Amino acid sequence: MRLILLGPPGAGKGTQAQRIVEKHGIPQLSTGDMLRAAVNAGTEVGKRAKAVMDAGKLVSDEIVIAIVSERIDQPDCANGFILDGFPRTLVQADATEAMLKAKGLDLSVVVEFRVDDAELVRRVAGRYSCAQCGSVYHDTDKVPANEGVCDKCGSTHFKRRPDDTPETMTARLQVYYKETSPLIGYYHAKGKLKSVDGMAEIDQVTAEVEAILSKL
Ligand code: ADP
Ligand code: ADP
Ligand code: ZN
Image 1 (tube, rainbow, N blue to C red):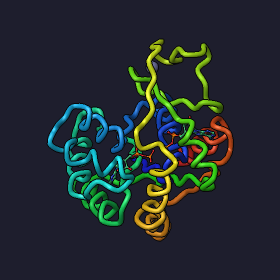
Image 2: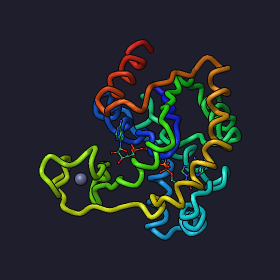
Image 3: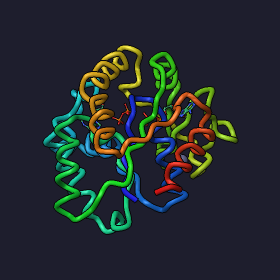
């Protein structure tokens, strides 16, 4: 199964990707997570990406395409993968198609998450994650069962993203509508697009996504 999760910042892609990983045993390839790891590690790519990410703009196509191309060659991607946050531009979408074709692979489906802007802003403002395992939480909508303790790994350290501020979120939404939303039409035309109501509760969204995956 090779999936693309498409949707604006805060739509729930990462949350649902984690559940698909657990249920289907295929890895989540989040370009955002990979770029943040590069920033933290202080690599050349990280140095080039940091200011762009903090401003809510897009890292160059060239960089992210290279990162993904290398990643999908790893052995754990042999049975499929979930692309979360990639592709994000038409150039990246064309590159994805070429990449898969060159490897003799096909794309199973693109799942689009539909969520209103006001809800996206609310979600991103309350987002935090486990500093150890990356599990994603929300101040009111998704709190750990034991307050202050990660459900998955037991860590008591959490962090917030520097770009999850209301100001940066405005820029990120503009970038989404301008650069990324054309991909909805792009994949619709290829017969690959399925949309889910991302406004629903997390478990309800998971059920909708599973209904799509079960028909593949
Ligand atoms: P979100 O939660 O907004 O979906 P991500 O974690 O996917 O955020 O991305 C965070 C930032 O990383 C983006 O604002 C952008 O700067 C950069 N980034 C992630 N994926 C891509 C991509 N495919 N192309 C360009 N930039 C990207
Ligand atoms: P994305 O990867 O698309 O940027 P996330 O999965 O990180 O989005 O979700 C953004 C925030 O919203 C997180 O704090 C998460 O816990 C919360 N969230 C995710 N899905 C839902 C939902 N269906 N309803 C309410 N909150 C949600
Ligand atoms: Zn954890």
